[in-house]
Length: 201
Ligand code: ATP
Image (tube, rainbow, N blue to C red; front, top):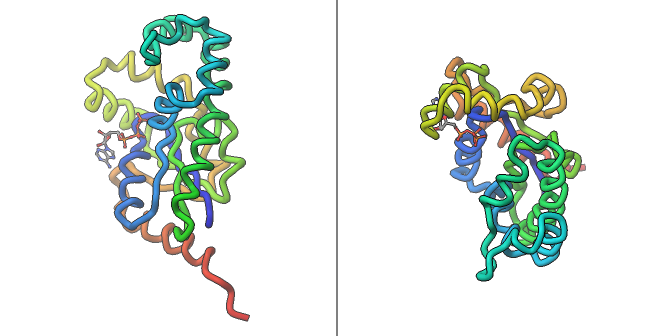
């Protein structure tokens, strides 16, 4: 089974595109959703977070004190990096466990906003980047999250430029309304299926 990473900068449409692969029957692991889960389920991670941020990083009922964590990492890149360096190995472990549920899938997708930044693309057989121009992505996120342009831009600047990711990615899906997305998804799907098919000698 192939492991395929799918990413894209904020508002590129990586989640929307991943859902199209799901319609084709491909299992998708949503890393950001899973990251939130492991922060309250992975014992090793909980202990590491408490070790760095203090016992008060969790409430007595085991839920995460998101306000405390956000207060520390907001506008503090070193702390944000530290948090990410604790969370990423736990997400990796969760992914490796999750994959075991799908022994018959030709390939699975790992959707992650920071696939390239975190280095987790190195664990993937191939990678897909979903792209759209910055102004279009910013406008989508403003509409989706009901936030200002400044807020949307501040999220964008924290990410590796789209062009750099494109250089590293195996496939690009252009989601800027200039090309139909479904045919692009189908082409990549067929190529990936072909890569998993046994070679006839
Ligand atoms: P984030 O990194 O912020 O989670 P994302 O890359 O996962 O974003 P989506 O959530 O899939 O992006 O898409 C962002 C918004 O843009 C959503 O509201 C989605 O419905 C919309 N969207 C995605 N693709 C298109 C498109 N081709 N045309 C119009 N709207 C789109």
